[in-house]
Length: 504
Image 1 (cartoon, rainbow, N blue to C red):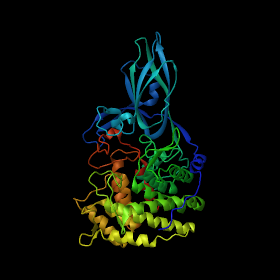
Image 2 (cartoon, helix red, strand yellow):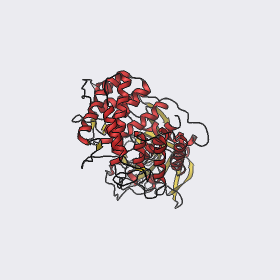
Image 3 (cartoon, rainbow, N blue to C red):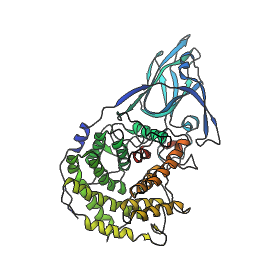
Image 4 (cartoon, rainbow, N blue to C red):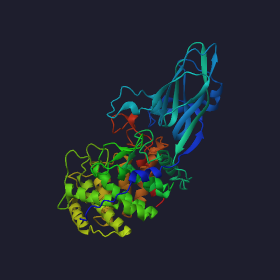
């Protein structure tokens, strides 16, 4: 093993200097709509247009009245409107409830009671009391939405209110205009992918602009890949790498971080995410040829490999440790041993490639050999798949395929066998689906990769997505890793990578 190297770089200062300027665009709502229950609709409701939103200028509302706006597409931003009043006397505040919906269920279904094991304070609604009428109303909190349900909870009997000049001030750091790929098969699928990344690109690559509104390391790698071939805000990737580097805890690169009021880590540590820091840095250097930043951060990569090899690897084999979070996918039944073994191979190979590109003298050849041998021991020749403590899963085949421990055709066959096995553990999220797709692509099965992408992401579009969702099962619109689909993110950038594959 090469010794860990420490380079005193003021990473947080460098990250602050790279804070991007955001682009603001004013957008107006398209229609006033209502939703009717529909058992045949995947999202459980069908939209009915009532009238053009411009007609709100002539409508007056009293206590108990409401309407729902459709902006025609997803955006991240700030809502504003001018609240007019007429009547005998404005003798009290106007009390409003605004619910911001990414999907119809957000503005139709009750949020409470909830079984969510993460905080329900993420639910996208708020109340506002407007004291000075008529007057301008600017909603201070940023929201991610397509629909807005506006409820007039209370005014007095002496006056009515009218909503004028309703706007969304959409915001993003994806300032470059990018055209979707041409062709009927993937044009809409790509459009949705680009929109998803656009709305997640803020002053960092947020995982979701509604929830969690923070930077996750595993998500960063996937967002960065799409960014390199689309919006090309490469300084934003660099800024995120610096933030992770500057906010290590006990030398560890943590899984996620917040920016405000001051940059800080969340306290979450995920081993596979930390190992992917090495891969993310390699891909950043390959995309930008920023050798200087690669050299600044390479010592952190060395520390990641040395420290985790010492703690988790014995004779080339990964050792599961209780109490450590191995993510790989949101799936309670997934055995993660084989996937984690493969992630170590991938990280060491990435570090060797990065060192070669940076002209840094390290040699991980022996570590890669032993880890690869440990991986091959998990391959069942008779079944044609990798077993993880006896379990067959899509994830195990995908990560081993990216570790390239077998000839390409055998990795492709292993993935296909697992996907055809009804008892295999399937991918549960677009995050895990990405790695299945990437393994197919990087082992030479581009057509199979794109066919699967069309089926999966195209299926999401067919079922009502205008940005890609954090969690998606074709047969269950209420699936949620958090035990309540209302707390899902319906614009989630780990789900946008179909736009990367389409440009390779």
